[in-house]
Image (tube, rainbow, N blue to C red; front, side, top):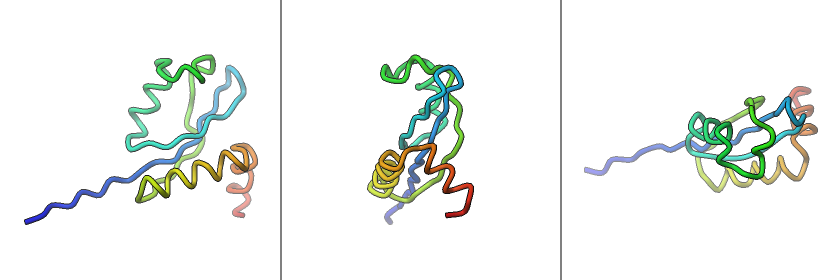
Length: 88
């Protein structure tokens, strides 16, 4: 008997009130990843602590997560969020 596990991947956008900047990423475990970011384990965004989640969604594959993450980064998180809020 084979067991299949469904692993969802989260694509997320964080915002730092400290730096007034956004950060976009993807992970298998969003809660854990936020804790890591806020512990300063991601040196490139350490200055923005504390980070808060302003948007997230789940997709079924890592490939889809990476594609969406790249699409958001190319568009810019602020512009992407504006489009999402308008329902575009």
